[in-house]
Length: 201
Image 1 (cartoon, helix red, strand yellow):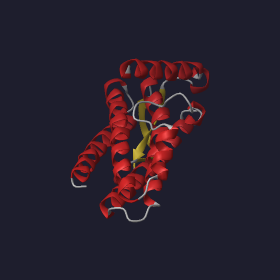
Image 2 (image 1 turned 120 degrees about the horizontal axis):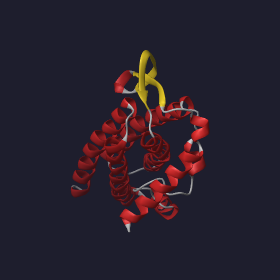
Image 3 (image 1 turned 90 degrees about the horizontal axis):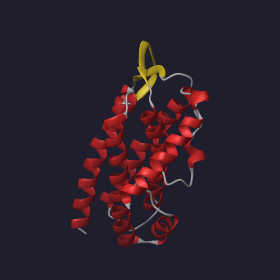
């Protein structure tokens, strides 16, 4: 079922992007340069890189995925009597993914594409929490909240890693590929940290 769901999500996203083809022009765009922390920033003169459908789909789907991770982090950061290591991790996730959202939104703007907000309700890819999941996290307190946050965020990160792997397999834009690799590396490390925290609780 998971494989089928991913195929349906991908097919829907591709169909949406095909419908936008008239707005995006050809598949070549200025490749942003690299800013602080290895994140892309302003366009670098004379450098171009192709942007294909995989790059666009990854970007459009990763934005709401990141937004939910930030929301989950905000929920646990509001809790009291939570292991400081969990709070530190939540802040780390928020600090990393917030700027990545800004970068991806700037890419969509550069590519003449709408923000991913119009894709709400299509699933956004594996690892997304349901409304019930988010309500459960919001209602939890103390160690229960920390435990639920870690379990949910591991699943959430695993979904992001799958999306990043798909981009690394099929994408062409060097900046988007670099971000996908960054997500894969950082979130793999965070999953290991979260599993260690769960084992210590």
